Length: 397
Length: 240
Image 1 (tube, helix red, strand yellow):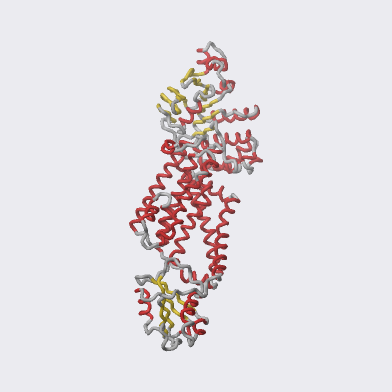
Image 2: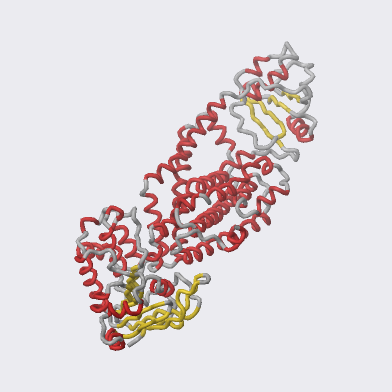
């Protein structure tokens, strides 16, 4: 006898993949990625090349190449390491270092304190603007051309502890799992509901439940949804990788690639969180399917689940803070928001190992409970063609 | 003869309403058993409780000495429910293959092709189920019910909606299954079908059994009236 779980998974997977609407839905995502890429290219051209610099900005330039004339107050007689340390200690806001081999390399080092998750430095135009604006008006004799000419700026973001953060670079890969999770829940939420409601709506329940156990039927459906999620993941990642390879010489792409960091622990943690979260969210949605008689009735319940999942994004700045506040902790452990909150905190490096363990255990327990509840509810309501709210909700009504 | 179904002191309440008060009966292996009664007398409820869709308020409902488990391969069951449907958006063949795999058929495709030929629907194999007429869909549902050569075949109004020709075909298929050794529980309102097919029957009214035994025994107890007349006498002209 073939494995009933596999039979259900295969059947549910194939019949979804055969639907044109499935492909229309998932192909939207790469199109959106392309659109975002184009928009970022267009907005990159709009980077302010001459940003204003506050009067009290403390900055200095160390010039080992001898480009700047002697006597300039901002020309500091300090080494690169000393300037870097002054930025860390707060004595300087900005520090430029022109290395001795500048004429050959055409590279300037720029040090400043990171203010969080800055966008990638597109081509150094903004920093060149700062340098030009700071120096040119004060010293006529300055060889402005040397500074505003074709040279590269190494943007070195620092923290007050002296580390060189690369928050976005580290976030890119693990945040993909968060994006996928959102797409899965928002785009496949209705499909997840329908897959369970359909049996009731088309009066298949009794035929199917005398052929396969409720547990195998529900878990098979959930697994098929996860397989569809993998297809969606591939349709998102493969074009992205292809685009990065084709456009690897593009300044934006090369900057993005050079700043991307692959921190295996963060990536694996978000992958595990993603798997657990998909089980939990799918469990919640299929449970709703078991208590509602028709797809129309079920669809009104998708909203609250999606809002719960997306809710932490409205408080992104709170998640980016180095010290999470009480509300962030609340969202980290509140069932519906927990998956997103934990993935965000993992991305921003504020999720500690004990918190991760507690969170994973919480999501695992909740997923198991929800899936068990779904199995029981489907068995009980398989031939109930009315809305079957749980007792505690009925009492409130 | 061994009992394949045993129902002991079965009681079923839905809220404050008692549908079955105290029902006990057995179905023997290999027999055709008629579960009869007017609409709302609890026939379908009894079958659904037997198959685990309802949790009984009291009593025991056993198949081959155990509570029903759809993946217990020792007792193969075929169930044609009153509320029946298949995956409308899938093809006839895909429906048959899916159920064939779930029911553990060695070669579901071969079986499906033979069956479709038998019920003259071979040209519909690749059509979506929703494109078939109601009667044609019922034939596919019957196929799903009998495909695993069940030891116990449970049919809830199997001929409802069939034209006389297809009703005859269905009867043939049921008789074939019986010859292969299946016990059959059948709910029907057609007394001619009962007299022709059933070995024993039970008549339910108000949640209890009003008559139970072989057709000959029941007729004898009711002055040899026809089964239809006995039915009318028991239900006193209630709306069916």
